[in-house]
Length: 603
Image (cartoon, rainbow, N blue to C red; front, side):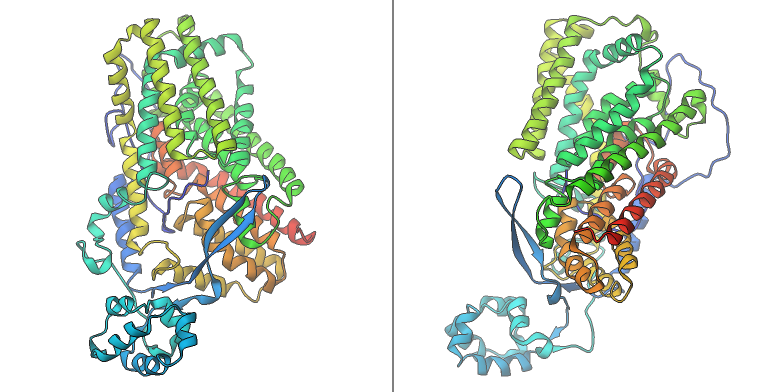
């Protein structure tokens, strides 16, 4: 789902979390001796050390890149259900750098403006307030004084463009070491706290952090019941010799979730079930993350109906919403099939030699916590009822998202209810000798398991805050980068321009790992740009969705990815090392589809 959390295009944020908190040590196995083939490995810095240097790199960038902004307006469109939707987007032609205001020039112009009643009314300006302003010393005017008179930056620029500014020097803005009022109270060394407290319950970072902790607690209860373990081993016993078929089927299922309703954050709790499942079958946690989160992003990238992604992009671009579905459905089928085949090839190698996995040691956590003899785990009525509760909860969530537009707050509530009901069943049927206090403790321990993932979400948000945020209507470095890229794309042949759009969207996803957020920032620029370079606006929306989808499977600023990696206890560096090959595979497929779309004039 197009979560709205934002991040930055400077790669490396790592994450490693083990039960009970953050640790860079391997889990200790109880009464087990595990022999691991020793290999020479390059030691990477601690997770937070690298995050710190990313923050510093972003901060230094703000000393070099001048800030810019756009004016914004609302764009409305009608979705496939006939409902009117709207999104605040930027006006690409209104980009400007921030310059120092020349109060003398402004005063001269205002003395003329004050006698033009029609223009005053057009700009919603109060003549008496302007008269009071002109009586004051112009040398003492500041932004607050001007705004009190109705002269916001946008109003002044709309009236006089650059003529009342000193345009010989573009302004750069950077955070101080400590929080200060002149930079929204943000200090570069307070990035963890500031990142964690940004946003609201509907998005990054506060909403995602709360979402992760609640579902962590809910699944802590579910895992404590033992129903997941019992179900896994019952499945393996029933499908002996055919269990590998579950991998492509799950990959297709989660890809469909991404394509139909933009599944993303929802994969975090499902990873809690799937990862122990695939490890029990002889695979590794990389396979578990791939058939849940990666598959969902394949669906997002090739979707023909995602209401949080392609529908918004088409609405902003002025393309009929959900048009071009036949092409995209074919693209989804081919890409999902190719992705499942790629994963099966890897999974087959791991099945033959589990110790060859780069996450073999961290996967020992799951092996150490499984029953000693899984074949003898009894599947009871209580276990069946817990699994039925999970299935019912999943159906409820899918219905709510697709029919009622449920989002983070509602979905978190649904998972909480799922965990609560599972806990009540466990007490009634005496599953794992659980009592009422055990349910509460399981919730607490489950939430604690994901504290590390929640912290990383805040840190990722802090990267963006260092650059001044991502609001189009405020002066920041991100707007300047966006504008400069749009200008650079002009003048290339159509196919090359389309591929550049695709590459740009892929890179920009590091800045804004949010489908709807990225659409609001980039489509107002790329849609009219496509007219100039000779490709259809449908192609520009295709470049958007492919770039915004595939890249989410590797960027460290994605809250959803970091949450899933937290569940899997996978270091981001190990994940990136493995996933970069799959990422190149998907990027190549996407490039082929872009070239085909240009060749057939996809519209």
